[in-house]
Length: 275
Image (cartoon, rainbow, N blue to C red):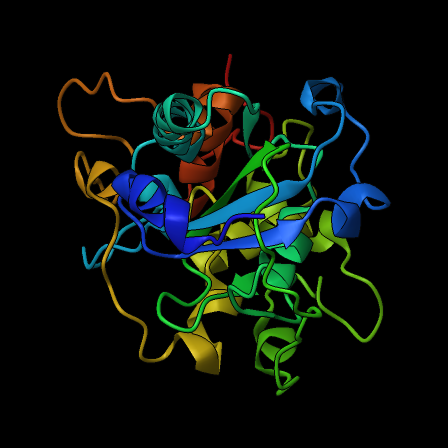
């Protein structure tokens, strides 16, 4: 087996130093059923896990923090692809497969096993330097890399995120996705009056950062976004001028985010997305 330090120089070319490794066997029984699972090679040994900080000090706005930077699927996807090409050159006898977000890998669990932080009650992985303001990406490989060998560690359960959650999605039981305000802002179906009210009160036309903002682990994080996130930063929708940069909300189309903006601004006939 090789040490993680042997490939760290290649991994850090992605713009982040937050990399770890867990054994594929520790994740194999927890894979998420999806088409991408077919991309996992026979004899997978290791999962290289990276956390990509996106927080930018940009002031007030009506978008959640991850939506203010270019679409993370696009940004992290390209970075991981380039890294995989470098790994293939260095280890031509082995296979490397990158994943981001829509992945068979339970990324928070993998990151925790890789020693990259603690799991918050909001389900997010909290890195000791960058907090939870990160996107997680993975590279599955049949290259045997020495894993971190850690059990998942959970946060201190202070209850701050549960008390502050505007939708009540974080109760004493399991996370209730349908109550999560971030999910509500992405909802294409007709909104209930209660859902509209929550969007209006929160003031964000896409996403929600409340649970991260109140988390004590996020109080003194290092604001050091990877360069590709810092470029083309915007704080609010609609964007000023022409913008050809991929954005996280575009997968839902303009109608949903425009509806939410209308709710915040007190517009009429905004219950259904505009056509």
